[in-house]
Image (cartoon, rainbow, N blue to C red; front, side, top):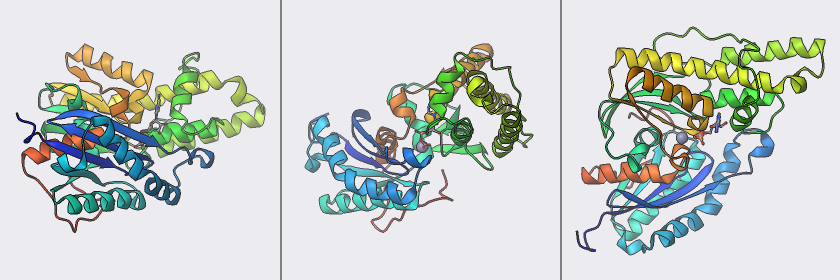
Length: 339
Ligand code: KG4
Ligand code: ZN
């Protein structure tokens, strides 16, 4: 392929609290810049208004750095891909408007990308030969979804959460355990020295492949309230066992549904993505499941597990090959955006 007809795509991700830009050349991710907003830490969760303002401040530098690191000028770009949704509307708007303005100024096509579809396909950045159909498990602070993937752009959500996402369950439990936000990594770390069978919490009985974590949250809350009444130092004295027991409960709920889905839909592989896929117990439980059932398990590098524009770029590339472009009057879709 000559220099002239290389497919050079710039991708932008701004759906939540990460401002990210990536350059993809002929299906290879050349740069992937992620600015993670720290401003939310003191509030114990993402503050939408602050998130959108921060995207606005950072997006120009992030895009410029992505181009610079890839050694590409904007005149070489053949398309702009961006996250259309789902996500926070103010955050999405920053990326959508920026992408539209750039596509218009450069007179090149615009490609809308579904954020979840991007998580699902993120492992193709590094593992190009995953066989179809595969089962994708997207588990993050905003999503808990089981998805059957029949082809690159042909996928179906078979299970989702009816309330909190798994990452939210980790973060809310961590808050009750007086740990900093985001609490998932703290629970993971503190669990290492704990007994995961020390305490048991209620597991939900939810139909099909769907999830619910709000009951678990209540179960932990009531348990801690009761114990702290008896001993005000209960949390501090039992923090390792509490973390390990909470982690085990959440991972058991996830693996139980994974098992149901993989039994009903015979698949060649299982992939996991999203921030919770960094959890050591979850990773080893999925790997163990795959090993026992002779199913390949694919886990993207952590850089591509959490929100990043590299995963938007790879979907942008697949859609570019199909000439699947959108018009300049496209708007963000907060929810109801079909895969
Ligand atoms: O994918 P992500 O970076 O952002 C979105 O939510 O889109 O995921 C963040 C979530 C947070 O809830 C965080 O607590 C959780 O992933 N997380 C973890 C771990 N690392 C990140 N949860 C459990 N164990 C971890 N090691
Ligand atoms: Zn995400």
